[in-house]
Image (cartoon, rainbow, N blue to C red; front, side, top):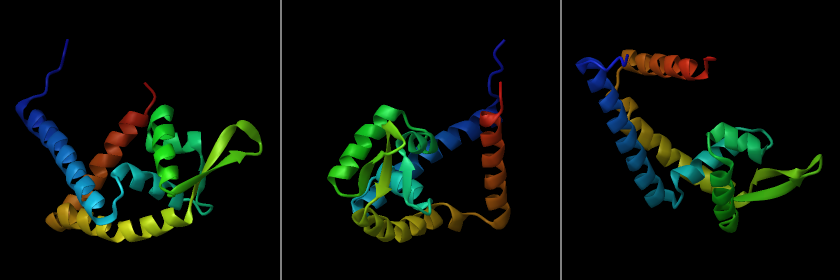
Length: 151
């Protein structure tokens, strides 16, 4: 038997869905206008800069971003044409490849990150008090733990 959402749950769920869609759209618009990067470009660059070596295996990057391999492959090709990343064959695995942050990619993320953080702060955190931030973190952690839990 289906356990339908009650009015309170439905309000929370629909609010979350609307918030997520509108927040992503606004962050994308601002990122594009300020830096010429898409949020997807930024996500790839962030994943690479989170590594001391600024390089990742393609499959590892796909898993980190939760993207299908084909989507990532197409996106990386576009980023490589723009000089944001480089690819390097893996010496240990003929089928594998590394994605490396290029000098242009480093310049791009260094320029894009400050206005992006300012936008996140303006749109999200400046409107929340400390208890709200703690609640948001607790909710995100709880949902992510349920997703990761074995079924």
